[in-house]
Image (cartoon, rainbow, N blue to C red; front, top):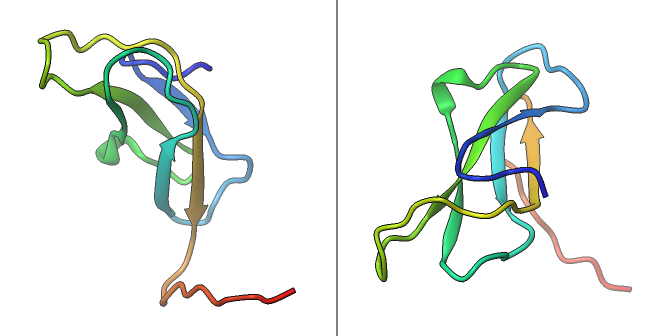
Length: 88
């Protein structure tokens, strides 16, 4: 619960040899207004990225948002990432 609209330096648990691909989302939905995870792409490095919460302004002009938990994956390399069904 550390990411807000003010921005948060998210440090990857490992460093990459190049800037990785980054996919992230909100893992919690605190507060009354819809919100989305954003990141500052120009500041992303091989060790981390600055993420922040952007709040929807459809119903009001307020853009400040309470803290949220985020989930993410950072992937290095080239190629296609594919999913497959696994049956138990």
